[in-house]
Length: 226
Figure 1: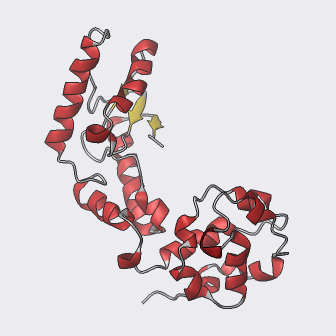
Figure 2 (figure 1 turned 90 degrees about the horizontal axis):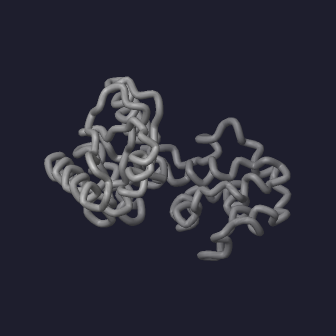
Figure 3 (figure 1 turned 90 degrees about the vertical axis):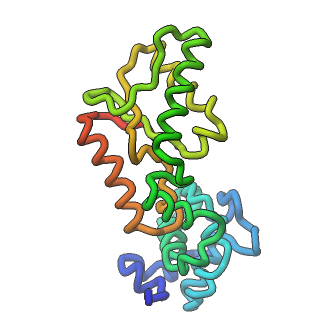
C-alpha cells in the first residue's frame, strides 16, 4: 500500500509549509480558485497540518488544470504543481475521477485511449486522404510508417471518429509546405492521460512507445496534438 504522507513523497520540499507566506498570490492567479472552497494556498496549509489524506481525497487536485500560474506567481517558489500532481498519484486508481485511468489502461492494452482497432484507424486515414484529394489537394495521401520523414505526427484518439476534420488542418499545412511527415501505424496516441492522473510508471511506458516509433522510423521531430 502506498504511503499517503505527501511530505515523505516530496523529500526535497519538506520545508514547503514553512516557506508559504499564505499571501494568496497563488490563489489570485489560479483559474479554478474557490471551487469546492479550495485554492492552492489551502492545499499547502493542508500539507502543513498533516491533512495529507484529506487533500488526496479532495476534488481540488483534479480540478487543478496544472497550468502553472500559481507556481509562477509564488514569491517563495513553492512547487505547487508537484504537490498537486503527487496528490493525484496517491489516489487509489479505482477512485480516479472520470475516464482518465480507464483511458490509461486502454492505451496500455490497445494502443490508444479509446481502444480503436488498428484496421479501423488505418481505413479512416486512407478515407480522409481521398476526401482531401477531392477537396482540391491532388495526390494527397496520409503517409503511414514512412521511414526517414521529418515529422512523426501523433493523433488525439477522439479525432479519428468524433472530429476527423480536425486532422486535416495540419495535413493541409504539410501539403502546402511540401513537408515530409508520417503517422505511425501503432502507438499513434498523442495524449498521455497518465501524465494527468499522476501515474508516472504508465506515463513513462507510453512516452517510451512514441520514442520507440521515432527511433524505429529514424524521425528527428515529433508533433503532439496537444
